Length: 132
Image (cartoon, rainbow, N blue to C red; front, top):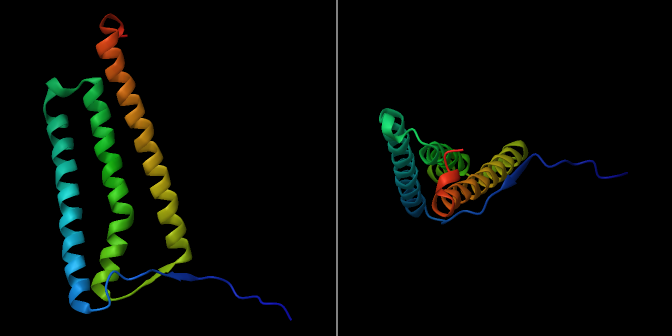
């Protein structure tokens, strides 16, 4: 007789064992999450509304703000829900999705930062070729 059990969920480590500290962590995570969304939303709004900022560097900055919003929205809502509802479980599919999106968004962010660095290099070191 072989073992035919399958993994359906993982248990995450809790930040604290007491409910009061978990509520404090929820409030801290909520503040960080809202600050990140507000800051990136302001960047998106400022660049989208001002036509003078429609240059390649600000195009990259908009994409960087979107990727940052995606990165923080991948993990923090589940961490806040676990802290608020005093649970520790995450489904196998949910964990896989979080890991996939986090790796994809971080690698996209690093690629975009590399392209932005090259853009600045061309603008500074070869200003006559920057337009092309």
